[in-house]
Length: 71
Picture 1 (cartoon, rainbow, N blue to C red):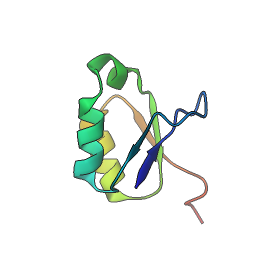
Picture 2: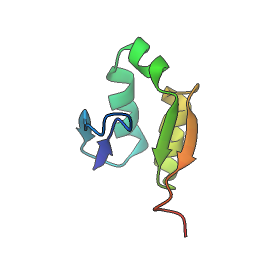
Picture 3: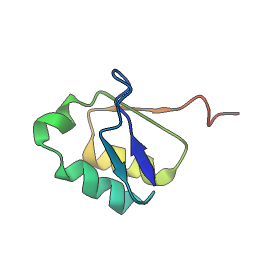
C-alpha cells in the first residue's frame, strides 16, 4: 500500500491500496487540479513507480528521496 502524508500537518489524507504507478496515478489524477498544482515536493523511497507517477501527475513538484531509504 501507499500512504499519502501531508508533511506540513502530519495528517494522512489517503491510503492507496497498491504501490504501482497505475494505482498512484489513479489517486493523483482523481484529485482536483488545484490540489495537484499545490503539491510542491514529493518525498518517496526509491521506487520507480513513485517517480513515474510523480513525474506524470505532478510535473511541477520536486521529487526527493526520503532519508530513511538512503544508505
